[in-house]
Image (cartoon, rainbow, N blue to C red; front, side, top):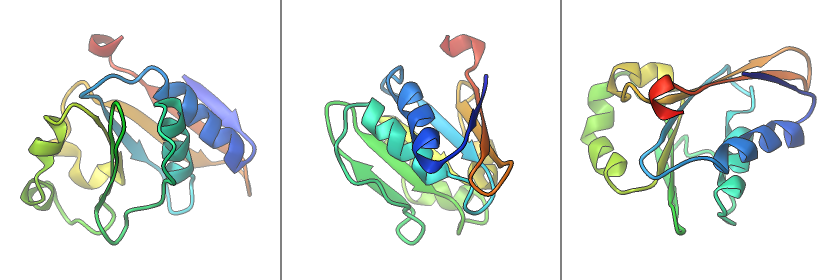
Length: 141
């Protein structure tokens, strides 16, 4: 499913719709260029999950944890060169903690993602316009 958004608020609203249907253990892999709106989408996901935390990019910390009834673990893989580095920070432990793992720059760790990963690709189509494509695997529907 592809949604066209025209501002950051609409991109976050698309994330909120996805966040409302997420379940413990889900992994959401995001791709898109620098400034595409990945963090805005995840901010919306958090809201849809019922979290009130202030979501920001974990570029320098690798992962931000937003705790709630169903926690959100927000990863930024921009600075990782391969999935081995992801396993070194305890990736498998995060997956097993019963929250949702949202992974920005997921293409850097593609081989570490489970097969039932939900994929979100955000493409810039204008200054503030985005094409947000969400792919939910058959096994997850």
